[in-house]
Amino acid sequence: MAAFIATSARSVLTKAASFTPRLSSAFRSGSASWTQISTSGSSHFVPKTARFSTASGILYTKKGRPGPGQGFQVNFVMQDGEEITVQAHEGESLLDVAWANDIDIEGACEASLACSTCHLILDESSYSKLEEPTDEENDMLDLAFGLTDTSRLGCQVLMNKELDGIVARLPSVTRNAQQ
Image (tube, rainbow, N blue to C red; front, side):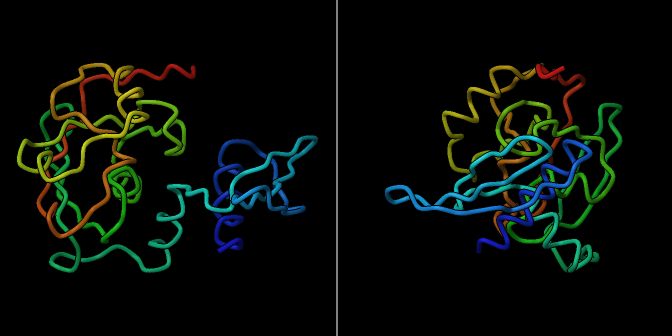
């Protein structure tokens, strides 16, 4: 598990900057285990249980994309009304599905729940099958442009059999508060 987290952390940090982080130590504090990730001149501690969304992208890169009828169908409706239908693996986030299929969703925070640039507007029937958004997701959704009653962050919606055929509309504009 630690190797998996370290690999995920390296991927996230490498995308964010042009340096290569290295795993330098680990420790246990109370009931949490922490891993130190060192980068050029700084180091950060992350929980060993931390989950990085890019991990699913790493997992599915090795598997390849599912063909028609092999995965779950996702229908992205672009800003101009064009509908793009793709296949997704079980457990894959809508953000990762979009990235894997070259659909233009930013995801500026790399799925760390620190922005709203993966904001999607879901169809009513799919939205009703999801658990309620967490407080953290709702906080980020409050920053989204064009918020609707069925808005969700693509990084927080994980594909499963119930969501097969989901329709996710891209909003006309996204707002990146990090810029």
